[in-house]
Image (cartoon, rainbow, N blue to C red; front, top):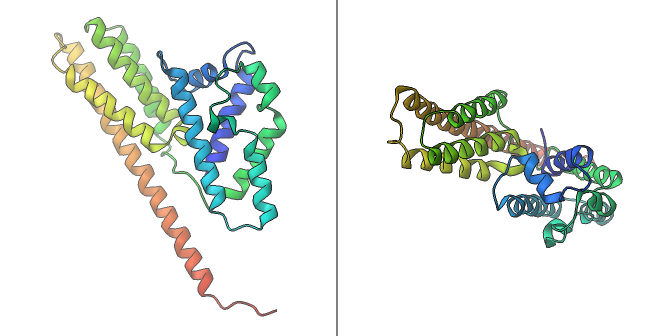
Length: 247
């Protein structure tokens, strides 16, 4: 199982190792997450803000000694710029000099260890990666189809956004995946009458099937997460009922 701290760590580690030094940090994050368009960088910044706030709240909810809490807060504080939007202008090289340091990523790992088993994220079933690849393949088929150019553009972009949400579910979260599925379904509904050939109608049908499978995958992840939370809470209740050993 993963945590919000681990999800953030994984994204930052990829940027640190693979992104070009002179690339804008937010642009690199957006590219990694599969976010495209004029608002790609603000969208990436929004995700980083959201996951930082989530980690912050999860630390607040932990039952810790003051010294233990301070250690976690200090480790997270290295990334306060995600909350204040102070990192938006940095290149990857500047980010490495500022917050994107190996020791800071190790600090996030400590936060993950503290949260693990208490504030775990929901995860997608094993076949989600296959669904993400099917979506990418479909986007390619639509882009090379005989559908109108405008329809090809909007549907392929929406499908790739769903694929990216599947690939990075732990980072972007279920709400983002819901938004992408709703956006794809809306685009499909608005352009349902654009297919003039049997081949194009088949592509639209496949798009609808991707939506259905995405919804089913998301529902499975949510149900599994709710069951794990329920099991954890039950375990806590049982533990509290056990007789405590006197000193």
